Length: 433
Image (tube, rainbow, N blue to C red; front, side):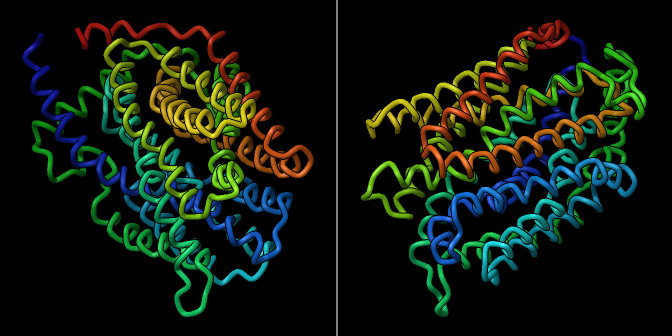
């Protein structure tokens, strides 16, 4: 072990404690503001006379704008920097979520969901890109897993709260589903304002790092960029011609079409498991997949970092996710459905951390931001199509067709991934030894 390694470990640990908790909180509210429409639908759909097809359109509206504004947002990110763009869009999506309180029909809900997609489009690819300026590659699966951990934590806490608000919060004579958007939107506005003071673009801008610490981190990241084997030196004009990038995009598009759509529709599907289930009980039941994800995500990301193995750490959760949809479709047993929900959480949350090590491993640094945005744009297209198709399947076939469709998407992602040539990172193995 070289003398620089203990220093490096200390610096990386310091950066993690400074950056990851606040990124975690931002993504916590991002996830909550994005999927709260699924809980609102438990009573909103009846109140506003929203059919399953129209709800599919409402859910898809978010992904249309999210798709269209991914790359423009990433270009703005590079022009204005994280410390300006991320706080601005965070505050804006908090305002849009809160204003959904005033919607009077399904069309208005769809418009606000479209605007929410515009605001949120730059957040996720921006944060993934941001991590590449602060963390060496050997740390990113764990860091990304910590970041994504906010997803199950958000679901764990927000699910019962959302269910309770929808059923019980009838303050000032307004329905609970309206207050849900306000309660979960207003804190996001204040977080956006706070982010202006806490987010820094690069290590050089961080006053909480000493000059020695800055020099080490900048040097380490520069050496890594210089030594990383690039599959293909891409210019912006060649991005759309790169087969590896498109395969990565398709993998993420299919699995996200299944997992994102399931987050919007699962509360309603769970309520259909039993005639005795209320909105509050659905909220408690939806804690199951999030609790499982919370327990397993860090272990899975850390294990991938320690072994240097990436492909199968991403593929296995995709297989489990598909299996969970099959179990939900194939049985009428409530006990087995609860087990399937646990597997659903295991699969849905554990592929993220390892998958998002692939772009920085396979793409040239100068186009990484655009590459990430393109992958996430395809994910948005999958989310749009997934919700749109599920709206029709729910009307025509009920839950069976919905779960079969999501299972097929997971298996398509799995097949594309396991047939890729992604080698074990030997340098990571040595670092972990």
